[in-house]
Amino acid sequence: MRNRADFERYVEQRSARLLRTAYLLCRDWATAEDLLQTALARAWLAWRRVGDNPDPYVYRILTNTHASWWRRRWRAEVPAADLPDTPVADEADLVGARDAVRQAVDGLPPRQRAVIVLRYFADLPDAEIGEILGCSVTTVRSQASRALAKLRVDPAARSATNLGSR
Image (cartoon, rainbow, N blue to C red; front, side, top):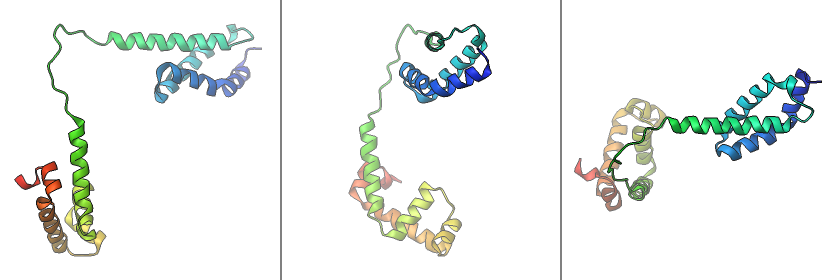
């Protein structure tokens, strides 16, 4: 009764439910998929010995494998006698600065905005930017220069970043 076809049928019928259980155990979909794959591989090795109701056996493999992974992960840490005194960066300042720069760039004319985005965010050379925009390299450089000049005098962008100090 316990052959490859039975195992394949069991996996087809129960894998979605087993995957949800694995996710609830580890709270990460990628880890849950790995956990389920490991549990099913172990179940296959013992499939001939499993009785008519394989669910309890497979769920036990799933929970035991998760527990062993959890224990193994924590053994990797080495406790320290003294905790380091490192300040935590305030991410709110970074979000505000990013928003101010985004607003300043949005305030540029379309061509200058395109040049700034392609040059500094897409990291393209001036020649490629010129091809994309249908203009010369000199025009790209002059548009970039004008855009940076506008960004330097924009009070929001200037306070958010140190463009003016360059």
